[in-house]
Length: 337
Image: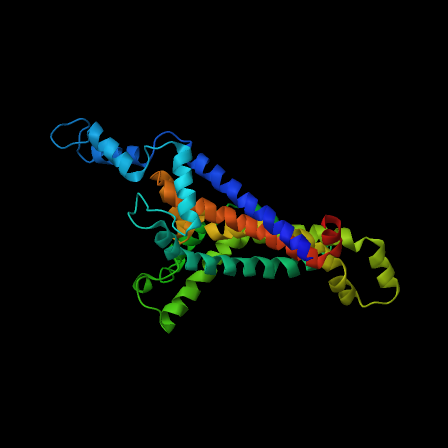
């Protein structure tokens, strides 16, 4: 088992390095950079390009590129950025004029809390509902769960968020669902009242972000369990008189969980980003809207840091799923050792 974990960890480190190179290159593929965006903002604000009277001149443009290090070749920019990242320095934000680590850290705690709550919501509902749906196959309950599951998959998260906003605005005007805090608690210090207000907003955000994932996991759990229920070992255990629910929970469910555990690889980054469009609609202080703003402003260092964070979470999630699969199913670690 230790060899299995070490091999997976080494592959994860190599994957993160390759991901850092690809993310840095992809972010710089679109034409232009932050200086171009900044100059456009100056010109639309009343400055004129090439004006000798203090406007946006070529000399100013060159000075800005030299100041931000954007006048160097891409491989030089990446080398300097990667060296700083190894020492815990993600650079200075061009858009916010603050250290990138500070900007990301401001939203990280709320993002982790929202992601954890959404994961508990998705797994806590999908596993028992999927088991019940499989056991009650072709019943009214199964058809109802299947219909709700397909609706959850078909309706986009942002559309559900907009629908909830409209319902709240029309029928419950005193119950605001935007953001994670009411306006009076946004900048207030932590207290019992602020915590209660946070919880009252958190469940709505977790429900919207986790709806599609919950519906998908229900379908996966149902399909996998139906495959296991028809296998000979289940028939044998049932013939020996093992109680039905004990039989189901002890053997088929354990094997049916394997595909669900493997979804950790993509579940973590999706939850951490909080679905960018949903976060924008609901005004959630997660990493998703920050990434969108950084990309629109062509803020290289903030974009690269968040893409690296999400990519690292994908690798960590895959590593955790590999380890959990090895624990749940000994055949996996034996075949890969």
